[in-house]
Image (cartoon, rainbow, N blue to C red; front, side, top):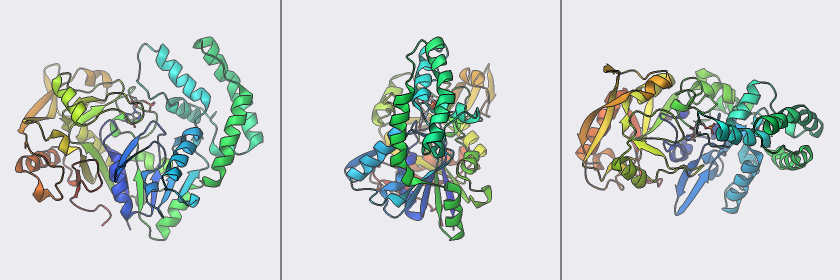
Length: 429
Ligand code: IMP
C-alpha cells in the first residue's frame, strides 16, 4: 500500500494534471485537498484536450473515486458545469465516483466581487485569478464562511446570508463603490446548486481512512505550487491556501503517517503567472520563445505566463519544505530547439552569492540569477520512451538538475500526451 502526494514544486502550472492522470492507474482514490478553481489542469486524452479546474483528473478513469476534500474552496456553478461537461463527453457515468466534503467552504458571489474589486483598487496588485479564492479562505479563518453543509440546509443558509451579506454589501458599496448583491437572488440560485450537489456530499476523511484500512492506494492531487504557499511562498504574492505538504493532512483528514511518497512536479524551465519576484525570468526573445514553444498561457485565465530558466535555488527550497522523495520533470521537449540551456544555481544579492532561497519577497525581488550553461541537444525527443532514447546532452541536463536539488527524477514528460512519458521508477511500488 502506498499513498502518494503530487505537489507543484514551482509557482504552479508545472503539468500536475498529466502526472496525476498517469499515476491514477496505481490509485483507487484521488483527492484534491486545497485551492479551488484557481487551478487549471490541462489533459490531453487521445485527440481531446480536457481542462479541469476543480474535479480531480482521476475522474477520467471509470471506477476511481475522486474526492474534493474539506480544505478546498468550491464554486458550485463551476463545479456543476464541470460535471455536465464530463458527462457530455461520456465520463463520470456513475455519480458515486465523486465525493464532496461537507465541511468545505463555498465560494459565494461576494467573494468573487471582493477579489475583483480589491485587485482593481490595489496599489500593490497580487494578480489573483479573480475567482474569489482569497476572500473565501479569509472568511473561513474569520469564522464567517458558508460550508457545503450549510448550503444544503435552507434555514441555516438563509440565516447565514442575513448575517453575512449586509457587511459584504457595505464593503462593496461604500468602500469599493461597486454594486451591492441581492439576497433573494443569491438564495434562489445557490439553493438550486445545493439541491444538485447534495448527492455528492460525504466525508473525505472517513472515505480515505476506510480505503487505507482496506489496503487501497491514494493519490493526493496538489494545486498551485510550493512558492505560492500562504506560509512558505513569496508572500504576499501567493495564493491563500497551504500548497505544501502540510495542506494534505489539514485539507483531507488523513494523518501524516499514512503518506509514503511526495512527488514534486517541476518544468524543465520555470514559469509564473501573476505578480511577484521571479529571479530567473527572461524578459528577452528567449522568454518569448519559451512561451511560444511551451504554449505558456494560463489554463484558468488565459494570461501569458512569465517564462525563465530552471531555478535550482527555488527548487531546493521546495524539495526541503515538502520532503520530496522524487521529481517529475515536465516539458523537457520544449527545450529541444535550443543551442544552449541555462540553470540558475545561486543568486547574487547586493554583490553576495547566496544559495538559499530568501524567505522575504522584497529580498528575492532584488536577487539576480547566477547561471551555469549547458549544451542543448538539438533534436526532437517527443517520442522518447525510456531514458536510453534521450540524447546524451538531455540526460546530462537532467542529471545536473537532480544533483543540484538532491532529488531523483521518477518521471520525465516529453509531450502533452499520456504516451509521451518516461517512467523512471514507480512511486507506488
Ligand atoms: P489566487 O489564488 O486567485 O488568489 O491568486 C493568487 C496568486 O496565485 C496569483 O499570482 C495567481 O496567478 C496565482 N495562482 C493561483 N492559482 C494558480 C495556479 O493554479 N497556477 C499558477 N498560479 C496560480
